[in-house]
Image 1 (cartoon, rainbow over the protein chains, first blue to last red):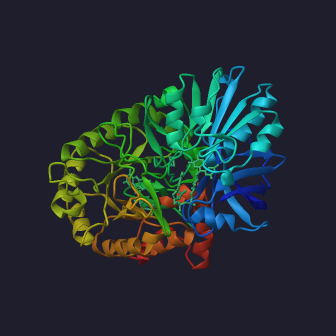
Image 2 (cartoon, each protein chain N blue to C red):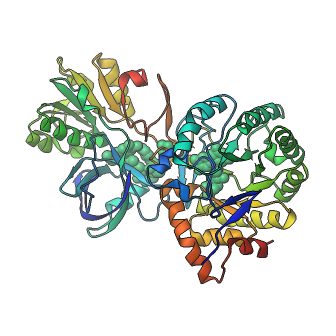
Image 3 (tube, rainbow over the protein chains, first blue to last red):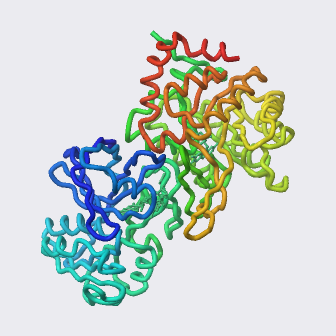
Length: 243
Length: 303
Ligand SMILES: Cc1cc2nc3c(=O)[nH]c(=O)nc-3n(C[C@H](O)[C@H](O)[C@H](O)COP(=O)(O)OP(=O)(O)OC[C@H]3O[C@@H](n4cnc5c(N)ncnc54)[C@H](O)[C@@H]3O)c2cc1C
Ligand SMILES: Cc1cc2nc3c(=O)[nH]c(=O)nc-3n(C[C@H](O)[C@H](O)[C@H](O)COP(=O)(O)O)c2cc1C
Ligand code: FES
């Protein structure tokens, strides 16, 4: 964990209600791993807001967030040049060692950002993942082109089929993948675990007091006892969750 | 030069700044961020006899200038605290630490206190009496002077370490409870614990916290805490630790001015992990600015 003051380079709409935030000044010495998150101090709010790392390169931290409440709405109005107090390098990310030769990345809506960083890292290690992205509507879709540009075979799914395939991500699972990496809404994660027996890892969300393991605000019961989503997670192997 | 030393129930602290229970884990999470040996001491997470998972999530709700928590005293139980957490704590913290104890019956408080009493490195036992008494119709020990005195006496009987009773602000007359604890032999008092509150999720029309209600802390409670510390410090002779909403060196000085001997910092650690480090660095400057050269004279002037 490092506390850093980063400056907004860009903070622009990416899709309906979804924004991409690029922050400059990231300490290049701090290693960030796919699946880790940062905790942003938004002016006027007491608690920080946890957001997953979508990309980190050349001193620039990229985050993608959905405007869902007051904090993210205020964040979406902050102009370039504004500085933010950010705790970086939080949580335990995805375990890449388990990927096998053909991993599958499954993301839903605001859960997609960390999978971009993961796809990049897997490709850097010579592993080409397949990517399955689920959205509610065509207006909310983002990053299909970016995943494709990385060289990952990308399938897009919307609920009513207004873009890409129609249905849920679980309706479009390929048959032969070695391991899955997932992030998205809880119902999607649970449906995914019901739909496949394959080993995999899931990133969870909880309301957080601190984001670095000090308050026990984010604890969940798992098959291996109580775990803090912010420190022991947010990524858990499915067998730890017992799903 | 400002003299920051304070004597807390017979043990000297290098400075009056103490992270509050439940906001600092067992120290080692925070030690990743800075050398926590700069602290006066810290109070570790509330310990019960048996392991407790606590309440279901959501356990945290944001508020204007603070938060509600309904963690529900999650901890691994006193035996695991002794066998697993204290060894890790001792690796990163080399001063006497404050052990925070919770219980749901007199027997639980005394049993936990008896086991922690044997532990080297523990300086004080801080007894959180905000918990409901399972034998008393669920009423909190801390809301009744007789029950508060009974816990104090029971714990005092099983330990030689100084006993600090941590008071709940959810009472009509905190002074009467403070006095009852002092008469029952408490070596010190700490106040305030969190104030009971709640929030709703307007989308679901349900309480935001799975537990329905939770404890309010953070800057929102600071004036209430100051008022209670002031009232209690006027009424008792034993040392009082002031807490509730403290987030800066100025806040610390204000707490000392209200009569506190030392000051705990809770929620501020959660949003700024370096909060206590920054406060300790700032405190001498702020004291000089207001013409003080000794922490203890601020307290004495306030009582
Ligand atoms: C590890 C982690 C990674 C995340 N990554 C992303 C991401 O990459 N992109 C993205 O769009 N969102 C992400 N989220 C969700 C994001 O944190 C919430 O959408 C955001 O906190 C909402 O803030 P708000 O003020 O707009 O909402 P409000 O509802 O007004 O917030 C009130 C309080 O509840 C908390 N809260 C509300 N919703 C959530 C939630 N889903 N998870 C945790 N806390 C919540 C807020 O942090 C705040 O403390 C992530 C959450 C976690 C836990
Ligand atoms: C997440 C959280 C957990 C807490 N856990 C405990 C606890 O285990 N025992 C205890 O005596 N107080 C506990 N408290 C209360 C604090 O120690 C402190 O009394 C209160 O938060 C007021 O101080 P603050 O405004 O500086 O946070 C907890 C507070 C928070 C926010
Ligand atoms: S949010 Fe504080 S321990 Fe996880």
